[in-house]
Image (cartoon, rainbow, N blue to C red; front, side, top):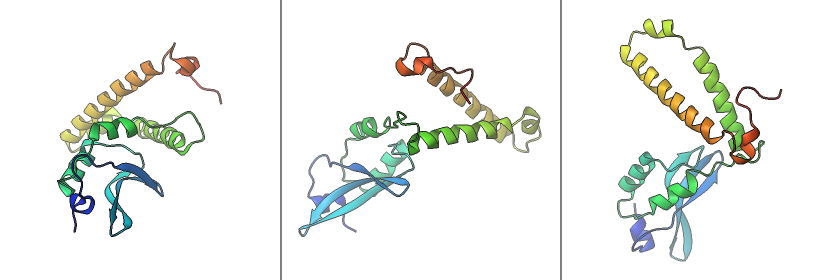
Amino acid sequence: MDTLRELTGARGEVMAFVRRKGNSFYLVHNVRRGGKVRQLHLARLGQRARITDEVVKEVSKKHPFVELNWRALREQFNHSVNLADPNSPAAQRLISSLRALNLELADVSPPLLRISESPAVARELLVQLRLLQSTVQVKLEQFGRGRGRYGNASPQGRAR
């Protein structure tokens, strides 16, 4: 298989972009070879266009001669969830995920953890719950009072 450098004749950074296909996002790059444009899929990003450390490692390993501006790609896509439209697929997915997480957490009880056959699983669950608690606290503060249109949102309840 040709490398991206061979296909593009690239020297320096390659301009990659994110493309949505179906319900998934892909990191892609267009190359011209023999007068035709060919789209190379550098990585599958999943249902959200996020550039993670795993994506960087995967692309760097798969295409070692490709030099991408990872910082710019991360800035462009890691914070691009648009929640302005409550009917948007991104907003609906986020709300649905939060509801499902709440239901899953409601089913976890300390007695269940005590009878777990694996203390490592119980410890990891507690670590993840503490991490989730701190993340939720930071997000609540970000959406807290005096923060524009979200300042009127009440964390105590919602209209039904």
